Image (cartoon, rainbow, N blue to C red; front, side, top):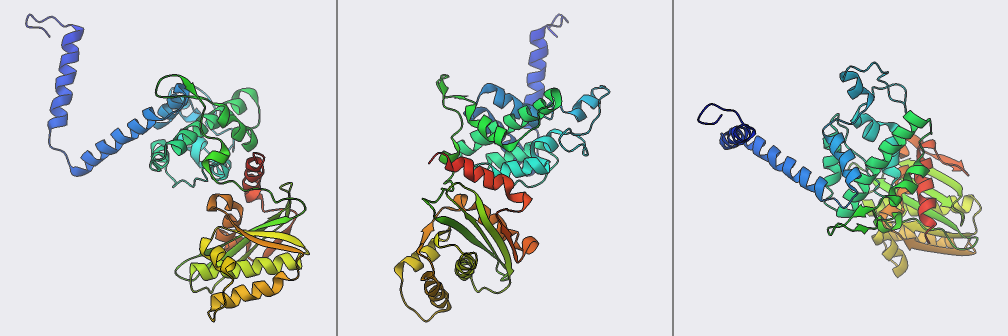
Length: 360
């Protein structure tokens, strides 16, 4: 109040400001200080992102848990079914519909970002995991993904239109963002700009991507997928293996296994692709040696004469995601060969590869 006891908006504002200043100056724990710093960094990342204001608005509402999901509507007293329209089982929360749904988790992993989130019930923690990448293109694309997923949810709820990964992947690049000057600039980077995409083989050659998963405990798994120049799956396989002395040896053994499979499957013109640069360089140098590595590579060279055309190429890990998935899940799929199909969990990754390859 003023000195004469009259209340005004200005005096109310001054009171709140002084109260907050005293509270901020009061002793606090180091964890509180860190938390304040993290929140400040979080908000800076959100508002600085080069995305449309409406995209920021959805991310902001998700962070504060004020998106009009069914759980929030019920809390406001509305008599609505609280279950998620995607799965029809769990309660629809912001964290659930944007990050936790099995189909949405597959979307995130199959997207150009290839993200796997740590599970949480707090939407802000998922956004923080996105911001922790500290890469502007990833943050922009991820925030736009959130907006596009929310759009897909609304189309399903209000229009009965079934959400699909293809629609999501095509929608994200169409959303433009504002640059620092306020003018419109191209939206989040296209698929091929954010990752090294899988590319189709030339002519009637079969491309075989392979990978190995290895741990210090020597638990090893192999994965491979063979596709033609239309992106169609010719074969896929996974094998659990339990003895490899190093990650490089695991990759070499996966190479030999893949060459042998290609021979057994009757492929004649092949190019194998690895994301292990050491293996690629060792193969190209074509040096002799007495080590187990050279012995395995020599086995591969002996089998090469079977093919009318053979080559080994190198690709970044982001272009080898299907084989990587099979290798890491080899204990689940162990010693299985699929002909002209893949496990259901891989459908989105294969589709993402094909869509990305259309740019080349």
